Length: 168
Image (cartoon, rainbow, N blue to C red; front, side, top):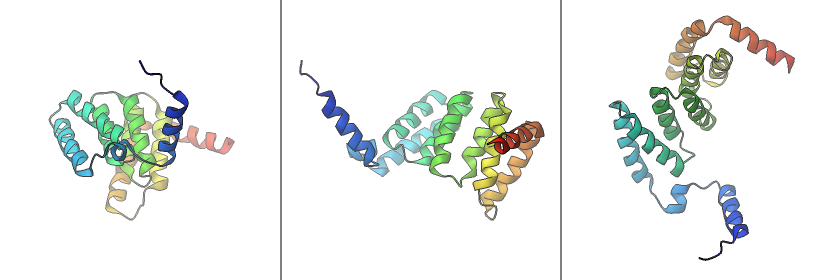
């Protein structure tokens, strides 16, 4: 068996990460091919085939970790499967990639609430209100949804969050 030069492998991995490349680019997979997989994954999601959808969305985020739509899809499947902790992570990546998109922040708040973590649910809604443009249709829609969810979370969590922010 051939000896692996770990230093060479580590250097190649570091170069790959620094280049902001994706596995899709490294392997020569086209956007059209990934979109075909996305269509299949979304179809599985819509029909409740959670395991199949989850596997395909995991494939998609592996091959293109910079595509927010794929992270959102994975989060939605995880939320449907009641893997709320996993969903918050996926929605977090999605939100990082599309800060002004209110959907991942809203759905992460739902997941945190399902986990009983009102403080982080409140934090998600605060981020939604801070970064989501108020003058767009989607912004108005999700700000209204966030206001309703805020009632379910309770004001105590928002007061606690504000106190933590003041202490910093």
